[in-house]
Length: 229
Image 1 (spheres, rainbow, N blue to C red):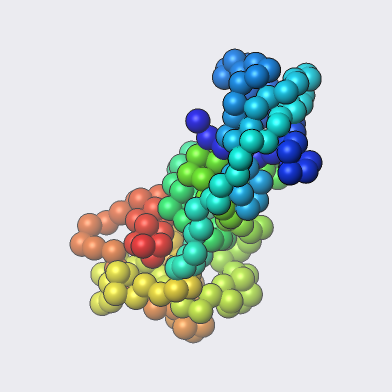
Image 2 (image 1 turned 135 degrees about the horizontal axis):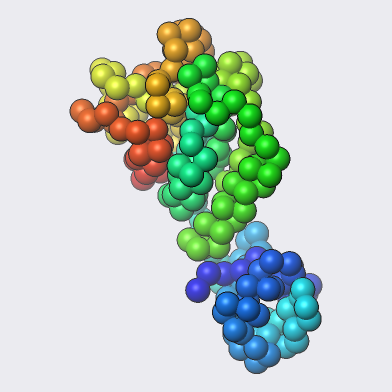
């Protein structure tokens, strides 16, 4: 069972509100006196339910434990927006693998050009669910979606090492792992020649992940898995 995010009132008391409270009372069928695993942004706790309201659950904290550190290496994913179903899948997977930040970008060959606030909130919820499941201490940041050219000129400049997933590149991703690395993954049609030139201009290195041609979702999950090792 995952650790639920809770507001820690003091060293002995906590409260869970909103959708999680409904899930705990409904599908999980928890009742007063039952125990739950909860967390805040730093620690995990074991707690007992003391009372339940319609949208709130109150708990008594019994013990605490340090959650897993992501530590190093830090991985930043510049992800060209792809089919939303695939985006949902990869966001969950790379969160579990330890990604530090996700930069959704719209490339010239991206089929999806508009991203609603509802979609961004959905991605944030997916991240939070994955963080609960894998018991990470920190929560990766989903940055505001932007054009790839904007990310090249501003967002990715803080990445100490900058890579581009590129089929047929001379260098392999595994050989360029570092303590703080960002990688761009293109849409299904790949990056345009102009986009490649711009990424090379700011010091991005093309890297290969093997001989087979991967879908974008597979490439993103594979890249984060390798870089986060």
